[in-house]
Length: 317
Ligand code: ACO
Image (cartoon, rainbow, N blue to C red; front, side, top):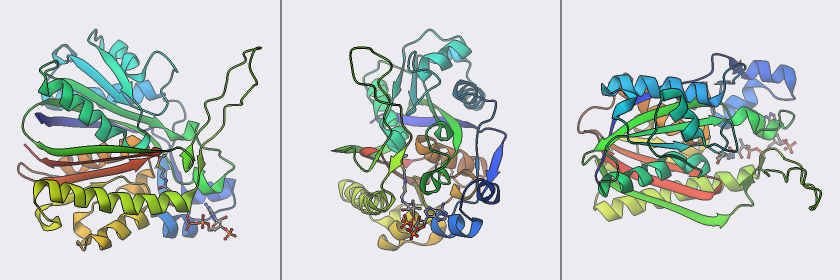
Protein backbone atom coordinates (compact mmCIF):
# COMPACT_ATOMS: atom_id res chain seq x y z
CA UNK A 1 0.00 0.00 0.00
CA UNK A 2 1.45 3.32 -1.06
CA UNK A 3 -1.06 6.03 -0.40
CA UNK A 4 -1.45 9.13 1.65
CA UNK A 5 -4.17 11.79 1.79
CA UNK A 6 -2.55 15.15 1.24
CA UNK A 7 -5.55 17.43 1.74
CA UNK A 8 -9.33 17.57 1.96
CA UNK A 9 -12.14 20.00 1.05
CA UNK A 10 -15.87 20.09 1.67
CA UNK A 11 -18.89 21.79 0.11
CA UNK A 12 -22.47 21.44 1.30
CA UNK A 13 -25.67 23.15 0.12
CA UNK A 14 -26.46 26.45 1.81
CA UNK A 15 -29.97 25.42 2.80
CA UNK A 16 -30.36 23.56 6.10
CA UNK A 17 -33.51 21.71 7.13
CA UNK A 18 -34.09 21.23 10.85
CA UNK A 19 -36.09 18.45 12.44
CA UNK A 20 -38.70 21.05 13.40
CA UNK A 21 -39.03 22.06 9.74
CA UNK A 22 -39.55 18.40 8.80
CA UNK A 23 -42.22 18.03 11.45
CA UNK A 24 -44.19 20.73 9.63
CA UNK A 25 -44.12 18.54 6.50
CA UNK A 26 -44.58 14.99 7.84
CA UNK A 27 -45.75 13.22 11.00
CA UNK A 28 -42.48 13.33 12.98
CA UNK A 29 -40.81 15.34 15.74
CA UNK A 30 -37.41 16.69 16.73
CA UNK A 31 -37.60 14.48 19.81
CA UNK A 32 -38.15 11.24 17.76
CA UNK A 33 -35.44 12.00 15.19
CA UNK A 34 -32.84 13.25 17.69
CA UNK A 35 -33.38 10.37 20.14
CA UNK A 36 -33.46 7.59 17.54
CA UNK A 37 -30.67 8.88 15.27
CA UNK A 38 -28.74 11.82 16.79
CA UNK A 39 -29.69 14.01 13.79
CA UNK A 40 -30.80 17.61 14.41
CA UNK A 41 -30.54 19.11 10.92
CA UNK A 42 -29.19 18.35 7.46
CA UNK A 43 -28.16 20.27 4.32
CA UNK A 44 -30.62 19.87 1.45
CA UNK A 45 -29.85 21.32 -1.99
CA UNK A 46 -32.23 23.89 -3.41
CA UNK A 47 -30.31 25.48 -6.31
CA UNK A 48 -26.96 23.69 -6.28
CA UNK A 49 -26.26 20.56 -8.32
CA UNK A 50 -23.82 17.82 -7.37
CA UNK A 51 -21.16 18.89 -9.87
CA UNK A 52 -21.07 22.42 -8.41
CA UNK A 53 -20.59 21.05 -4.89
CA UNK A 54 -17.92 18.62 -6.10
CA UNK A 55 -16.09 21.40 -7.95
CA UNK A 56 -16.10 23.64 -4.85
CA UNK A 57 -14.82 20.83 -2.61
CA UNK A 58 -12.13 19.95 -5.20
CA UNK A 59 -10.86 23.52 -5.46
CA UNK A 60 -10.48 23.72 -1.67
CA UNK A 61 -8.61 20.39 -1.54
CA UNK A 62 -6.34 21.40 -4.45
CA UNK A 63 -5.54 24.76 -2.87
CA UNK A 64 -4.71 23.12 0.48
CA UNK A 65 -2.46 20.63 -1.34
CA UNK A 66 -0.68 23.55 -3.03
CA UNK A 67 -1.67 22.09 -6.40
CA UNK A 68 -3.49 23.19 -9.52
CA UNK A 69 -5.72 20.92 -11.63
CA UNK A 70 -2.82 20.29 -14.02
CA UNK A 71 -1.03 18.35 -11.24
CA UNK A 72 -3.84 15.75 -11.19
CA UNK A 73 -3.51 12.68 -13.39
CA UNK A 74 -6.62 10.71 -12.34
CA UNK A 75 -10.11 11.62 -11.07
CA UNK A 76 -12.07 9.04 -9.09
CA UNK A 77 -15.53 9.93 -7.80
CA UNK A 78 -17.83 8.09 -5.45
CA UNK A 79 -21.55 8.61 -5.88
CA UNK A 80 -24.73 6.59 -6.02
CA UNK A 81 -26.24 9.09 -8.45
CA UNK A 82 -24.51 11.93 -10.25
CA UNK A 83 -26.19 14.77 -12.11
CA UNK A 84 -26.22 12.52 -15.22
CA UNK A 85 -26.56 8.77 -15.73
CA UNK A 86 -23.70 9.43 -18.14
CA UNK A 87 -21.23 11.00 -18.37
CA UNK A 88 -19.93 10.08 -14.94
CA UNK A 89 -19.76 12.49 -12.01
CA UNK A 90 -15.96 12.27 -12.40
CA UNK A 91 -16.17 13.49 -16.03
CA UNK A 92 -18.41 16.38 -14.91
CA UNK A 93 -15.76 17.38 -12.34
CA UNK A 94 -13.04 17.10 -15.01
CA UNK A 95 -14.98 19.40 -17.31
CA UNK A 96 -15.31 22.04 -14.58
CA UNK A 97 -11.61 21.85 -13.68
CA UNK A 98 -10.40 21.69 -17.28
CA UNK A 99 -8.89 18.22 -16.82
CA UNK A 100 -8.25 15.68 -19.58
CA UNK A 101 -6.85 12.80 -17.48
CA UNK A 102 -8.79 9.51 -17.00
CA UNK A 103 -11.92 9.92 -14.85
CA UNK A 104 -14.51 7.44 -13.61
CA UNK A 105 -17.03 6.74 -10.83
CA UNK A 106 -17.19 4.10 -8.12
CA UNK A 107 -20.57 3.18 -6.63
CA UNK A 108 -20.42 1.21 -3.39
CA UNK A 109 -23.17 3.28 -1.70
CA UNK A 110 -22.11 4.50 1.76
CA UNK A 111 -18.86 2.47 1.64
CA UNK A 112 -17.84 4.36 -1.52
CA UNK A 113 -15.07 6.45 0.02
CA UNK A 114 -13.15 3.39 1.24
CA UNK A 115 -13.75 1.54 -2.05
CA UNK A 116 -12.44 4.59 -3.93
CA UNK A 117 -9.38 4.75 -1.65
CA UNK A 118 -8.75 1.10 -2.49
CA UNK A 119 -8.88 1.83 -6.24
CA UNK A 120 -6.69 4.92 -5.78
CA UNK A 121 -4.15 2.83 -3.88
CA UNK A 122 -4.03 0.37 -6.80
CA UNK A 123 -3.23 3.18 -9.26
CA UNK A 124 -0.61 4.76 -7.01
CA UNK A 125 1.01 1.44 -6.05
CA UNK A 126 1.43 0.38 -9.68
CA UNK A 127 2.73 3.80 -10.69
CA UNK A 128 -0.21 4.41 -13.04
CA UNK A 129 -1.10 7.66 -11.25
CA UNK A 130 0.85 10.14 -9.17
CA UNK A 131 -1.73 12.63 -7.85
CA UNK A 132 -5.38 11.58 -7.65
CA UNK A 133 -8.39 13.78 -7.05
CA UNK A 134 -10.97 11.71 -5.16
CA UNK A 135 -14.41 13.32 -4.88
CA UNK A 136 -17.38 11.88 -2.96
CA UNK A 137 -20.70 13.54 -3.71
CA UNK A 138 -24.27 12.58 -2.84
CA UNK A 139 -27.67 14.20 -3.30
CA UNK A 140 -29.64 11.94 -0.99
CA UNK A 141 -32.56 14.41 -1.18
CA UNK A 142 -33.12 13.23 -4.79
CA UNK A 143 -33.41 9.61 -3.69
CA UNK A 144 -35.67 9.59 -0.66
CA UNK A 145 -39.45 9.59 -0.71
CA UNK A 146 -40.26 12.85 1.09
CA UNK A 147 -43.56 11.37 2.29
CA UNK A 148 -41.82 8.39 3.96
CA UNK A 149 -40.88 9.50 7.48
CA UNK A 150 -38.83 6.37 8.11
CA UNK A 151 -36.19 7.37 5.51
CA UNK A 152 -36.47 11.04 4.54
CA UNK A 153 -35.45 12.32 7.99
CA UNK A 154 -32.16 10.42 7.89
CA UNK A 155 -30.26 11.84 4.93
CA UNK A 156 -28.54 14.99 3.66
CA UNK A 157 -26.60 16.33 0.64
CA UNK A 158 -22.96 17.32 0.21
CA UNK A 159 -19.55 16.69 -1.35
CA UNK A 160 -16.03 16.13 -0.06
CA UNK A 161 -12.77 15.92 -1.99
CA UNK A 162 -9.28 14.63 -1.22
CA UNK A 163 -5.98 14.95 -3.02
CA UNK A 164 -4.17 11.63 -2.83
CA UNK A 165 -0.52 11.02 -3.54
CA UNK A 166 2.12 8.44 -2.78
CA UNK A 167 3.15 7.82 0.82
CA UNK A 168 2.96 5.15 3.46
CA UNK A 169 -0.02 6.35 5.53
CA UNK A 170 -2.37 3.53 4.52
CA UNK A 171 -1.59 0.47 6.62
CA UNK A 172 -4.63 -1.73 5.99
CA UNK A 173 -7.69 -1.72 3.76
CA UNK A 174 -10.39 -4.30 3.25
CA UNK A 175 -13.65 -4.03 1.33
CA UNK A 176 -16.48 -6.57 1.26
CA UNK A 177 -19.85 -7.10 -0.45
CA UNK A 178 -22.24 -9.88 0.56
CA UNK A 179 -24.62 -9.82 -2.41
CA UNK A 180 -27.67 -8.81 -0.39
CA UNK A 181 -29.59 -6.10 -2.24
CA UNK A 182 -32.83 -6.61 -0.29
CA UNK A 183 -32.11 -4.48 2.79
CA UNK A 184 -31.38 -1.22 1.03
CA UNK A 185 -32.07 -0.33 -2.59
CA UNK A 186 -33.53 2.12 -5.06
CA UNK A 187 -34.92 0.91 -8.42
CA UNK A 188 -33.48 2.79 -11.40
CA UNK A 189 -36.59 2.41 -13.57
CA UNK A 190 -36.73 1.01 -17.09
CA UNK A 191 -37.11 4.07 -19.30
CA UNK A 192 -39.91 3.95 -21.87
CA UNK A 193 -38.95 1.12 -24.20
CA UNK A 194 -42.05 -0.05 -26.10
CA UNK A 195 -40.53 -3.57 -26.09
CA UNK A 196 -40.28 -4.14 -22.32
CA UNK A 197 -42.59 -3.84 -19.31
CA UNK A 198 -42.35 -0.42 -17.70
CA UNK A 199 -40.63 -0.22 -14.30
CA UNK A 200 -41.13 3.15 -12.64
CA UNK A 201 -38.04 4.75 -11.13
CA UNK A 202 -38.60 4.39 -7.41
CA UNK A 203 -37.36 5.92 -4.20
CA UNK A 204 -35.03 4.56 -1.58
CA UNK A 205 -36.32 1.45 0.14
CA UNK A 206 -34.78 0.45 3.47
CA UNK A 207 -35.40 -2.24 6.07
CA UNK A 208 -34.15 -0.02 8.90
CA UNK A 209 -33.83 -2.51 11.71
CA UNK A 210 -32.05 -5.11 9.56
CA UNK A 211 -29.64 -2.44 8.28
CA UNK A 212 -29.05 -1.38 11.89
CA UNK A 213 -28.07 -4.93 12.92
CA UNK A 214 -25.87 -5.39 9.83
CA UNK A 215 -24.16 -2.07 10.57
CA UNK A 216 -23.23 -2.81 14.18
CA UNK A 217 -22.08 -6.37 13.52
CA UNK A 218 -20.09 -5.50 10.38
CA UNK A 219 -18.31 -2.53 11.99
CA UNK A 220 -17.25 -4.68 14.95
CA UNK A 221 -16.29 -7.69 12.77
CA UNK A 222 -14.30 -5.65 10.23
CA UNK A 223 -12.59 -3.60 12.94
CA UNK A 224 -11.49 -6.75 14.75
CA UNK A 225 -10.32 -8.17 11.41
CA UNK A 226 -8.13 -5.05 10.96
CA UNK A 227 -6.74 -5.38 14.51
CA UNK A 228 -5.85 -9.01 13.93
CA UNK A 229 -4.20 -8.31 10.52
CA UNK A 230 -2.06 -5.54 12.03
CA UNK A 231 -1.52 -7.25 15.41
CA UNK A 232 -2.91 -4.22 17.23
CA UNK A 233 -5.79 -3.57 19.66
CA UNK A 234 -8.45 -0.87 19.92
CA UNK A 235 -6.17 0.98 22.33
CA UNK A 236 -3.68 1.53 19.48
CA UNK A 237 -6.26 3.59 17.53
CA UNK A 238 -6.59 7.31 18.36
CA UNK A 239 -9.80 8.02 16.44
CA UNK A 240 -12.51 5.81 14.92
CA UNK A 241 -14.15 7.56 11.98
CA UNK A 242 -17.32 5.55 11.44
CA UNK A 243 -19.96 6.07 8.75
CA UNK A 244 -22.41 8.60 10.17
CA UNK A 245 -25.72 6.80 9.65
CA UNK A 246 -27.12 6.73 13.16
CA UNK A 247 -25.57 7.81 16.48
CA UNK A 248 -27.03 4.71 18.11
CA UNK A 249 -25.16 2.45 15.63
CA UNK A 250 -21.90 4.23 16.51
CA UNK A 251 -22.62 4.07 20.27
CA UNK A 252 -23.37 0.36 20.08
CA UNK A 253 -20.24 -0.44 18.04
CA UNK A 254 -18.18 1.69 20.46
CA UNK A 255 -19.49 -0.12 23.50
CA UNK A 256 -18.78 -3.53 21.87
CA UNK A 257 -15.20 -2.33 21.27
CA UNK A 258 -15.07 -1.03 24.89
CA UNK A 259 -13.68 2.35 23.87
CA UNK A 260 -14.33 5.85 25.24
CA UNK A 261 -16.75 8.26 23.57
CA UNK A 262 -14.07 10.84 22.69
CA UNK A 263 -12.44 8.38 20.27
CA UNK A 264 -15.61 8.30 18.14
CA UNK A 265 -16.12 11.79 16.67
CA UNK A 266 -19.61 12.59 15.36
CA UNK A 267 -21.01 15.07 12.87
CA UNK A 268 -24.31 13.35 12.14
CA UNK A 269 -26.13 15.95 14.27
CA UNK A 270 -25.71 18.68 11.66
CA UNK A 271 -25.39 16.65 8.42
CA UNK A 272 -27.50 13.51 8.75
CA UNK A 273 -26.31 10.59 6.64
CA UNK A 274 -24.58 11.80 3.43
CA UNK A 275 -23.66 8.27 2.38
CA UNK A 276 -20.09 8.07 0.99
CA UNK A 277 -19.46 11.73 1.88
CA UNK A 278 -19.93 11.29 5.61
CA UNK A 279 -16.44 9.95 6.50
CA UNK A 280 -14.43 12.41 4.33
CA UNK A 281 -16.44 15.33 5.79
CA UNK A 282 -15.60 14.10 9.28
CA UNK A 283 -11.94 13.76 8.26
CA UNK A 284 -11.95 17.33 6.94
CA UNK A 285 -13.51 18.67 10.15
CA UNK A 286 -11.00 16.87 12.37
CA UNK A 287 -8.07 18.06 10.26
CA UNK A 288 -9.34 21.64 10.28
CA UNK A 289 -9.81 21.51 14.06
CA UNK A 290 -6.23 20.20 14.50
CA UNK A 291 -7.51 16.95 16.03
CA UNK A 292 -5.65 14.83 13.48
CA UNK A 293 -1.90 15.39 13.43
CA UNK A 294 1.11 13.66 11.93
CA UNK A 295 1.23 10.23 13.53
CA UNK A 296 -2.48 10.09 14.47
CA UNK A 297 -3.75 6.52 14.11
CA UNK A 298 -7.18 6.40 12.46
CA UNK A 299 -9.58 3.58 11.74
CA UNK A 300 -12.23 4.35 9.11
CA UNK A 301 -15.19 2.00 8.74
CA UNK A 302 -18.31 2.23 6.59
CA UNK A 303 -21.23 0.04 5.54
CA UNK A 304 -23.78 0.55 2.79
CA UNK A 305 -26.23 -0.86 0.27
CA UNK A 306 -25.12 -4.07 -1.36
CA UNK A 307 -24.44 -4.82 1.47
CA UNK A 308 -20.95 -3.42 1.26
CA UNK A 309 -18.36 -2.61 3.91
CA UNK A 310 -15.05 -0.80 3.78
CA UNK A 311 -12.51 -0.50 6.59
CA UNK A 312 -9.02 0.96 6.61
CA UNK A 313 -6.30 2.01 9.03
CA UNK A 314 -4.30 5.17 8.34
CA UNK A 315 -1.37 6.60 10.28
CA UNK A 316 -1.53 10.27 9.29
CA UNK A 317 1.46 11.67 7.39
N1 ACO B 1 -40.88 10.08 13.14
C1 ACO B 1 -41.73 9.53 14.02
N2 ACO B 1 -41.99 8.22 14.04
C2 ACO B 1 -41.33 7.43 13.16
C3 ACO B 1 -40.42 7.95 12.22
C4 ACO B 1 -40.22 9.34 12.24
N3 ACO B 1 -39.35 9.95 11.38
N4 ACO B 1 -39.94 6.93 11.47
C5 ACO B 1 -40.51 5.81 11.93
N5 ACO B 1 -41.36 6.11 12.94
C6 ACO B 1 -42.19 5.20 13.74
C7 ACO B 1 -42.51 3.92 13.02
O1 ACO B 1 -43.63 4.12 12.18
C8 ACO B 1 -42.80 3.01 14.18
O2 ACO B 1 -44.11 3.28 14.63
P1 ACO B 1 -45.04 2.07 15.16
O3 ACO B 1 -44.30 1.51 16.34
O4 ACO B 1 -46.30 2.77 15.49
O5 ACO B 1 -45.14 1.10 14.02
C9 ACO B 1 -41.85 3.47 15.26
O6 ACO B 1 -41.44 4.80 14.88
C10 ACO B 1 -40.62 2.63 15.40
O7 ACO B 1 -40.06 2.39 14.11
P2 ACO B 1 -38.75 1.55 13.91
O8 ACO B 1 -38.50 1.41 12.45
O9 ACO B 1 -38.85 0.31 14.73
O10 ACO B 1 -37.67 2.52 14.57
P3 ACO B 1 -36.17 2.22 14.88
O11 ACO B 1 -35.90 2.43 16.30
O12 ACO B 1 -35.68 0.95 14.23
O13 ACO B 1 -35.44 3.43 14.13
C11 ACO B 1 -34.22 3.86 12.11
C12 ACO B 1 -35.58 3.54 12.71
C13 ACO B 1 -33.76 5.18 12.66
C14 ACO B 1 -34.38 3.94 10.61
C15 ACO B 1 -33.20 2.76 12.50
O14 ACO B 1 -33.74 1.48 12.23
C16 ACO B 1 -31.90 2.90 11.75
O15 ACO B 1 -31.15 3.84 11.93
N6 ACO B 1 -31.56 1.91 10.89
C17 ACO B 1 -30.33 1.98 10.14
C18 ACO B 1 -30.49 2.93 9.02
C19 ACO B 1 -29.18 3.10 8.31
O16 ACO B 1 -28.12 2.96 8.88
N7 ACO B 1 -29.23 3.38 7.06
C20 ACO B 1 -27.98 3.50 6.37
C21 ACO B 1 -28.23 3.63 4.99
S1 ACO B 1 -26.68 3.45 4.27
C22 ACO B 1 -26.80 3.64 2.62
O17 ACO B 1 -26.13 2.92 1.93
C23 ACO B 1 -27.75 4.67 2.03
